[in-house]
Length: 228
Image (cartoon, helix red, strand yellow):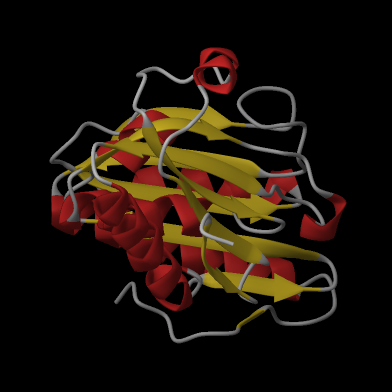
């Protein structure tokens, strides 16, 4: 299978590369640029972690994110799956980018906390690249943070706590009917000074864990936290 690059049980994620995509398919993918070589990262669960992993991948390779979509996936519980398409000029660059993204998943899932009642997700980068920009509108080169809670009401409180904690720029707030694929999540996207964004994300995480724990079980992460 020459298109297969790799897979991971983390998020049920698979990475593929098409070295010479058919123009008829490319014309109907609705991507923002027409590269002859495309890479695909597709997952059942997790959207932010895959985007953040791909953000690191495009920084390290000569590739560009050309489309990101949020499938509503019941395996994701209250959240999404993800479809990320990148483009490049050399199949080896695209394959490398997909592999870098797959290798980063254990890190970017480090601040995903799950319980039977819902989940929390926190993400942070000191310098956003193309994936964060396409997915979340993050300014390239500036610090970016994601603060998400499910059920969605927890995300609202997490976001409020975050912006009260540190001086950050609010890019948007995604709710079940606005900015998501009708997922039961509230997600704040922020940008600004790196230290302030990190502080805001950590404050959102703290209150989110407390609130979700009130619904029966303390949420746990499967991998070590990377936001410290």
